[in-house]
Length: 337
Image 1 (cartoon, one colour):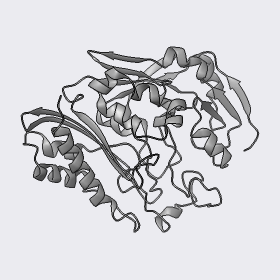
Image 2: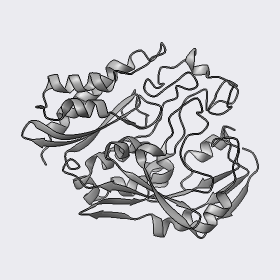
Image 3: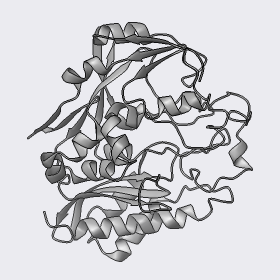
Image 4: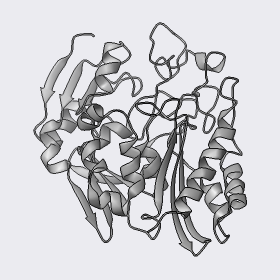
C-alpha cells in the first residue's frame, strides 16, 4: 500500500470540498471517500487504487444512515450498514427483495462494516482489473485494451458490453434498486440532486474508466425506493459457485403485481450477467397482461437475454440467466403476501 493523507469530514460541504480532486478517470481519482472501506482498502493493498488522500465520512453517519419506511416509499441513508437494512423488519416485510439482496451478499462481518453507498459503487471483480501486472485493462489503464476478451472470462458480463470492457458488475443491492425504479440523492457542494438509479452507472461506451455519473466531490446521501403494488411480492434469487460468501454468476430481482395469475405489472433486474445493474424491460413487457406460467416466464427470460454476447468461457451464462429468471418469477408468484 502506498502512502496517503487521511482527513475526516465533519459535514457534507467539507466532504465535497476535500473530495473534489479529479484524475484522468474515476479509477485513478487522487481523493477517495472512506466509509466501511471493505472494497477500497482491498484495492489499495493490491495497488489497483492509489489515492493520495482518503476522506473519512463516517461522522456523517448519524444524519445519513437512517432507515425510513413510509406510505410513499422507502428512504435508506447511504451510510446505513448493509446488516442494519437487511435486518430491518419493515424492509423485510414491505421490500423483501431489498433485504434479501443484502442478506445474500458478502459475509456477516463485511455486512456489519459496509455501507449502502459503498456497496452500489463497488468495483468489478475482474481478475485483470484487480492485478496490475496485467497492463491491458481499459478500466484501470484507459486505451490499453481488454485482456479478458481473449483470456479467462468465465464470470464476465454478457449484457451491456463492448470490445473495450466485458467486466461484470458484482453487486446485489444495485440489481434490486434498478428493478424498483429507485432514485439516488447526491450532494454536490451546497446542493442536492436526485438521479435515477438506472442512470447512476454509465454504459461502457468505450470508456470503462468512467464508471458512474458522479462528479469529483459528489457524495451519495440516500436511496429512495417508491412504494408500489409489487414491492411486497418481490424476491432476490442468487446463483453462485458456492452457497455463501460468493459473487453471483447469475441473479434476478423480481417484483410482481398480480391479478390472480395475470401480470398487471412487473419489475425485473438482472445481476451477475451485465456490465452494470441491468433492468430487463423487454422481459417485463413480455409478461404484462398475460397469465404467469412456466411458458410465459420462459418467453420473458428469452426476451431478457436476447442481446447477450459471449466470449468463450462465459458461453453458459445466457442459458443460466434464463433459468434463473424463470425460477425467480415462479417463486415470486408463489409468495404469500
